[in-house]
Amino acid sequence: MTTRQAATAARKEQITRAAITLLAERGYQATTFEAICKEAGLSSKRLITYHFSSRGELLAAVADQIVADAETFMRPALDTATGPRDLLATVIRANIAFIARNPPQVRALQQILLNGLGGWERHHVEALRRLATLFADGQRTGAFRPFNPRVMASALRASIDNVPALLATGLDPDECANELIELFDRGTRPQPG
Image: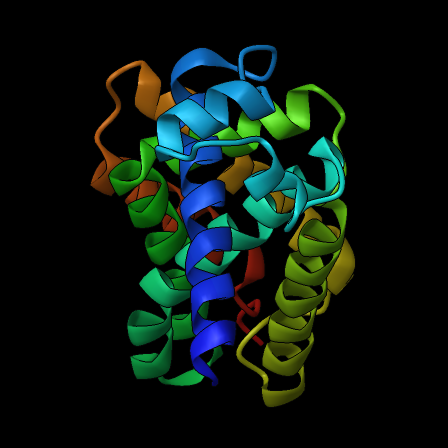
């Protein structure tokens, strides 16, 4: 990476991080280019529009950054999982740990979703695809019973997506993870022959 490319990447990250902070703390309506400039310590909106041609493009970059942060956070745990059942439990536990430890990113992403903004759909579709693949692979090895992997993936993703509301009521993240692991373990376990 050249010095210029590194500077461009650093500026884009500075802008997206400021947008995450504003989305989380003040909401979508208050996340204007002017407010982002102030939060990021930039002298002009042109420094934003040089990198992002529209608010939509910036918010798509915010979604990309949050997903990258989540993947970086979860990867070490996922890499240690052995077998489909362990990987399923690890996926649940790692997702909930990220949600519990990164409330600003979660609130920012919720603002993007609540306002019907682009950038998240492709990540959601990819997450569902990966989960469906996990379930299908587990079925092939006999670790999971027969079921529609896409339906199970959708049910798991919906459960994980509802965790922030549960944690906001004071539910312990470990308890939440344990309950979801138990639920999906029972729901996917092969029936005794």
